[in-house]
Image 1 (cartoon, rainbow, N blue to C red):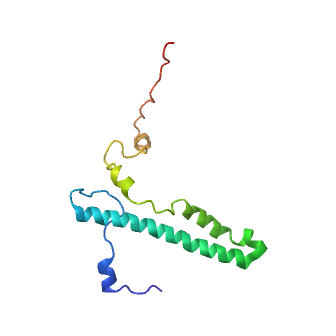
Image 2: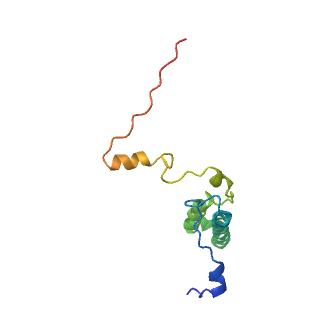
Image 3: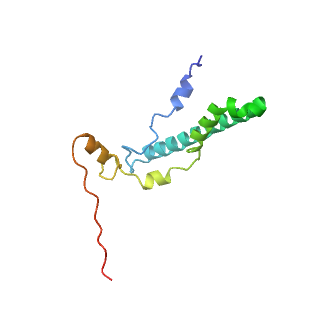
Length: 131
């Protein structure tokens, strides 16, 4: 059963999502909150991977020769978490931020257009240069 969170904890709990969507870069307070939220989320993922790794080590020691059969779920979970378990910081996301409503936002816009019944744009054609 989860423990109730105190008022002091709730006051310090972040209310900003871990993204730069809708952040005014001239508002230093909101920018710093977004940066902190991004780094906090990266640390949470890193610590989750650490906890699963520790449990996987305990399972290996406990199961011994049968660890391949009995620790498979932990192993798969650890491999999933290991992909993004690094603390990368926020500078890349901040400097290369593309708003969601931009035409460069994602490559899924062509699939969304196909789902809406619109034809996708033709790929560029390349011609050979004369020698």
